[in-house]
Length: 214
Image (cartoon, rainbow, N blue to C red; front, side, top):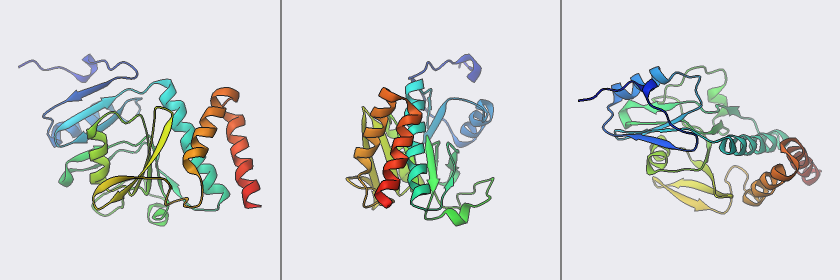
């Protein structure tokens, strides 16, 4: 048997590495070796570990979509706690996932001031974002985590998934923002950010929300 150290493996930007037959203790050891200050993202389900290295394009898009959500929450005066790319994992269910961005909204009060998560008592995030979902491992981990609303942006299109009876179903609207054309707005802001830049696009979006609420 050949044993490799993680530092011997290189995952190029935009690519992913799948490692099979990884038990829970090995998964925990890999997380410790990778550390918290890293660009890669992980997903783990039923012994399959996926390590992804995002492209700069991915990072821009997930950041802007996260900013869109923050603007909506702020302007609509909806309280939230943002947990970014926190690692969510639970041994009993044999999964682990790191969203691109995630938010506690309905359950925000429960998570105020929390520095550590215990998923045996803490709820999953109410809304998570993923850009370019590339594998079943990721979606299965979200299903087991029980995230009620998942936004997936891929190939210039946003899809909103709602967890119903243990499976994700595509929805035309967001339960968090039920009366707003979220899919169209996300596409519009991202397109404007490519033409005008991030800041002007987000300023214009914030003004649109304020004008709508006036």
